[in-house]
Image (cartoon, rainbow, N blue to C red; front, side, top):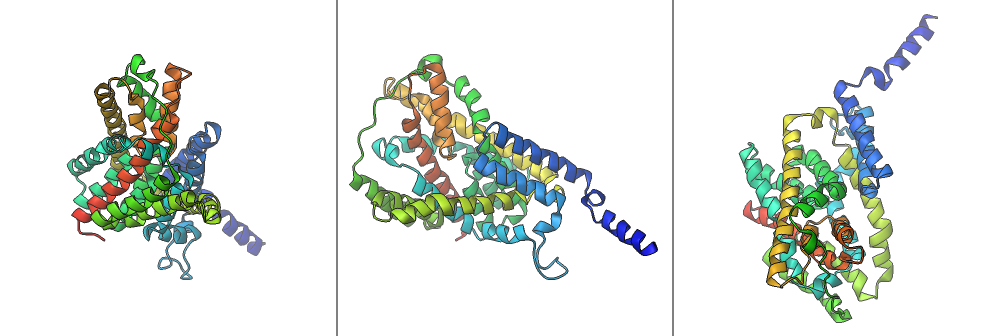
Length: 383
């Protein structure tokens, strides 16, 4: 009977109930809220679902992220090895290739002025950089945090890795992906505040047709120009343009389909769950994390506002030919930010179709965020 009693006692004490802290339960509740938002309200479910489930897993069973050095048998946890691919910047680069293969760059080629709107929306990045310095973060940590303002998860992970900020990579990545998912909630109030009903109703003219030659040359030329000026951006911009070249060349349909479907979804699963698994209560519930989340929100708000303000300026300069709402799509949450521009415009006038026009700044924002990351790397002498 003593043996049975000891066995049952050991089994009971091996359950998670005896090992979890109050912090773990808080993070489990947060994970369930994220799952609710992803499943019930459809907030970027492809991103938020794996992130939230990774958050759930690590707070139930922390050893799923244990390193080989800390493990009794020298074998790391499952999601630790996924996370290594984040630290090596492999998964973020592959995500960019998938985005390129999925995205039509035609609106940006047809309306090069969209580059200006994409550039304006990067203001949030530099505002967050100085805000992070003010809050006590060092230069490199501030740079890594600031990229959250571009609403670009892969670039945030890439830069944090390159700058050696792995200690705060988890909060940075979760904040970036969370704000990407919450674009439909965060952006509309800012867009409406900075525009009038009259400007929201502006209908933009049809974009000019873009030739096949232009579509093929665009990724090659951008890679050459950006790569020669800022070689540090090549892992991101190069992969983005390679994926787009797969799409536009028309001769590697199998590669384009693989990059935009099977490979993309595999990478999203691995990246999302590993990012979510960095949010153990011990690592996540601290003042630095709270600062990062607040800085990220401020950066995203500033970036959205800057895009819309510059959209208003372009609206006046073109005598009402540009709807300022498309400026908000300058953050690089593709294609969610462009869809939000369309939605807010359609609320003012159901016959207004801004989606394709908003895709120009949206694609420009992806490139702009990568360039901002490359600029920080160049400043700090990191390759």
